[in-house]
Image (cartoon, rainbow, N blue to C red):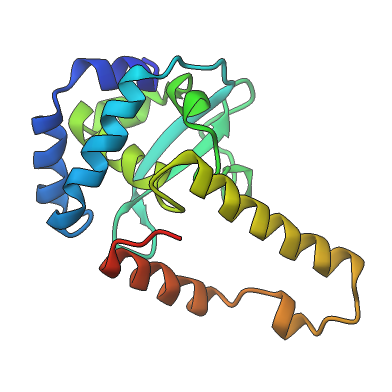
Amino acid sequence: MKLHEAISKVAWEEIECSFIAQSIDPEEFLPLYKIVFGHLLALLPASSKMTIHIDEDEYCYNDMPEVYGTDGETYNESMQRDERFALEFTKWEEWLGMEIAKDTQETFFLPDIVANCLNEMTMCGWCQQDIQAESEKLKKRLDNIDTNDAIPHDEAMIRINDSIAKLKGKRETGNRN
């Protein structure tokens, strides 16, 4: 099953209950997720060879199951962690065209799958333009690291603890930029 199929099979109220039950985000963010959900229903899925996985044994910074992608053409159960792909900068149309891994479908209910995907999709912003802007900022930083050795690595690199603190702050204020 592809993500767009999962989204079309669940009602917003089921997803809302999943967000609350899993404590994914403060409840005041629910109206923003509902807007994104409605937007996704109107988008056409793009072709993707990525497969979505949700791993309840691996948790990201906010105690949520890890959501990641694998190359659907080459994935096997013995793949290493470094063969997983972060999806937060992926265009939403491509997300919609991604297959949901069978083990994820067997482990999670559809509303939980959609809620966790919505959370990951909006990690860097509530709209695709904001997410693209964050992606461009990251690419620029990486280019500076590669092309300008004059920048001390402390200034060019993003410390993981600083990033986590920044993300937690954005979650608390509702600002994802």
